[in-house]
Image (cartoon, rainbow, N blue to C red; front, side):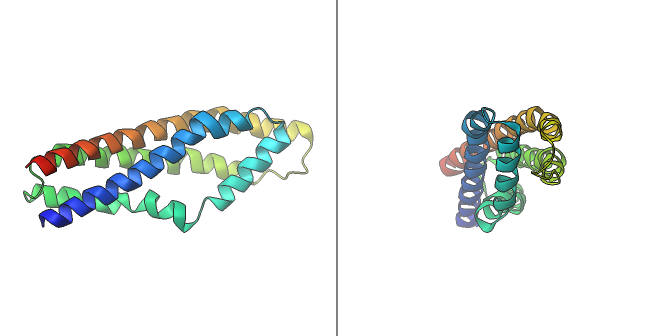
Amino acid sequence: MRTLQTVVLLASAGGAALMAGLFCAFSYAVMPGLSRGDDRAFVQSMQHINRVIINGWFLTPFLLPLPLLVLATVLAAKGHSGGALPWIVAALVFYGAAFLVTGTQNVPLNDALDKVPLDSAPDRLGEARAAFEDRWVTWNTVRAALHTASLGALLWALHVHGAA
């Protein structure tokens, strides 16, 4: 069971690391870069990004850590973690919160922006961007921080687990 716990913690940390990296990259590079373009270019770019990101390369590290963290919590509660249980629970809470932010904040904003026709009048494109950009960036930064916190908790859980 100890080996299973180690593998589950490593896989969860890998997923959290990939998500933290992706959302951080959006915060410090992608969105600042897109902010320099005009409204049509911004809306078009975000529509393209939001359509192509739903694929296995994204969904696997985004979804898999949740059930793995539940499994890690169960295993730790049964004594297979060497005292890492509080850190695993913290990682699960942070990851779950980030997942909720994505589902309740970023995805609805993406869906609303996706409905804006690119041949809309410039004023309509500007309104769509204004309704999207600042809120999306704020919530993206929140989820980046939550995924990073989850990763930190998982790395400490691995340390505690390994030291036991």
